[in-house]
Length: 272
Image 1 (tube, rainbow, N blue to C red):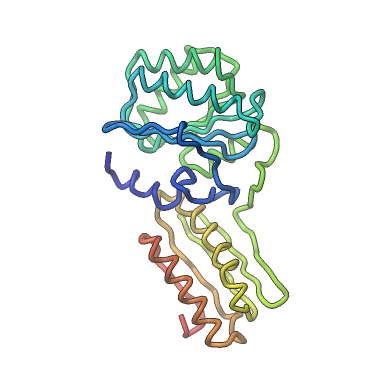
Image 2: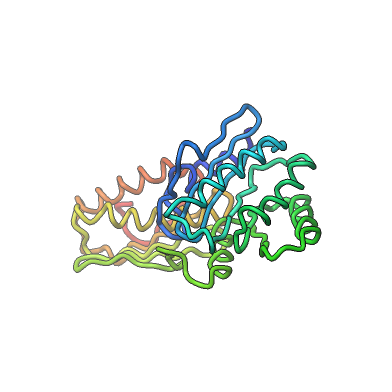
């Protein structure tokens, strides 16, 4: 079960231990909500009171579908979830397919047992998209079904289905600021992270600034299949001491080492 798409998930996906690139929240997970087999694996978790996220990888058979619904039934009983009003976000990036009986069982049990207000499938596969649309047409249920090309778009659709912003949701452009320094980040089309660094940060402020930047990187990678371009404007850092700049540079280099796909363009600031 190796592919560039699956490998990329490990670098940013909230069900791989990373903060959600849209909300900054950590997904609530439980060992009982995972499945590990040679040809199939499943991770499931609660992002917030109205969103359950699942990540199936590999091929699903009827028994796997049954186990998935056992997990969902348990999650619906948790106090952290609004059982009467939640959206299921299914990331099918690494899902290669399922058997016919499993698909029929999925439609029936989702409508009769789980009853989410909506399901958002993340997939770029045309056969999967066609299959999902066909299932919706045959099911004729009140469960709203949407398709998204990536994780941030899926959470945007989930927010619309819920009729409210997600807990902790951050816009594509956001900022961190203190009395001494400021960092403004924007996620642009094509996986570009624009970061404008200003002021004179103290060493104690650098981790918070890097965390702000990392959230933007994760969001860009989620939108662009695990790749991104970092565009840093450090012209406003001219008053920062070399020691502080060097500490920031080391933090960025450490971040880049975990984001192997990153390319970086820096405007101003010879220390970088």
